[in-house]
Image 1: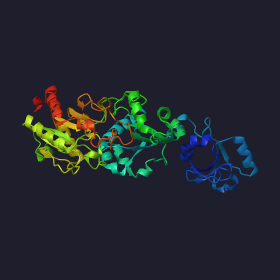
Image 2 (image 1 turned 90 degrees about the vertical axis):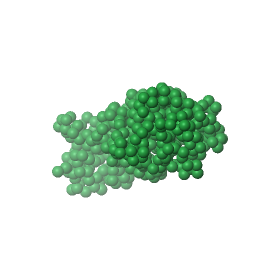
Image 3 (image 1 turned 180 degrees about the vertical axis):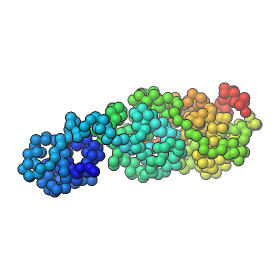
Image 4 (image 1 turned 45 degrees about the vertical axis):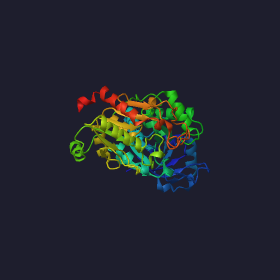
Length: 458
């Protein structure tokens, strides 16, 4: 049975050792001589004056400040109790091994923002951090906006950590209660808050990482991180400054050995052969993807998107050139008036497992710069042809892929807050995407078929 104790004085030593105090004692009251602190709340306790605590309610007095001063105060109140000084040099354990036994795992909160590609990259970052800093046994809660919960479940679906996936409203994205560190991830990590004493005590190397992340934010972002008016411009400047890719940009401190390898698999949890046969795809096929996130209502809402007329023309050109190939349209159903001309249209009709199956087994994938390109890369499904409009290929491409980017307009990536939804140059249909014609893409399809000898695998 734990001894009943009161804690006297809320000095630094209290915050440094409170986890051990709570683990070893039944704390009945927290006391401080400061009238400013009295009446305030801490860890569910209302701070009191020593004289107001019933002396019969506790056996031990834990002192986190000057021992002699408190002893005098106890004597003046005629309180005869065991008094233990709590500081960095003295704690009530017989040995260091006894002390270590009471160290607990950290509680970590991470909120993610973005589409499925952002979540896959965020998972890559988080896994790297948990591995590097020996945090695999930590309690990690993941928070995402409610409209992104499906994307998050897809990205984390075969990782134990997905059990702690929580959907929240946009207003409550800054989760802080009860965690040792609160992080947010959108392209790169940001530190909202942390309990330095706990991080330093439990995991010094992770403490250093968090401190350096915060320092990085202070050095590169004025007046806040995600919350200031210069965020988008700063992101652009950092891409140019750090010379990293979108999927390795999370390694802003260059200490996580980030590269194109995601370090994890996305196993397909359905029978691939059976599903492909059901869809009439037990044959060679090329996938064409609209690939938009759910927050976009139509193709015209996304500056990176190609219009349906162009996709249809490309599908017809491919079928004419490669009669033995089927074309398969995947991605979200954007309810456009012009229906798909692909041999098989599965837009809006696939689960995540079915989508992975289709992407993995396609001999070639054509897409805009989006999440499905990351999924195919992780699945090692083969090359993709990626259409780059406002975004820059040098910040996004993978070695196995073929990038198409015209020079009619300079990259607008991260130049304004609405660059993804509204052309920064004022075009209703971004001229960069409009200039990528179906005929041009067909030429790259032919190049890919020869470069990767795709006829050989048919």
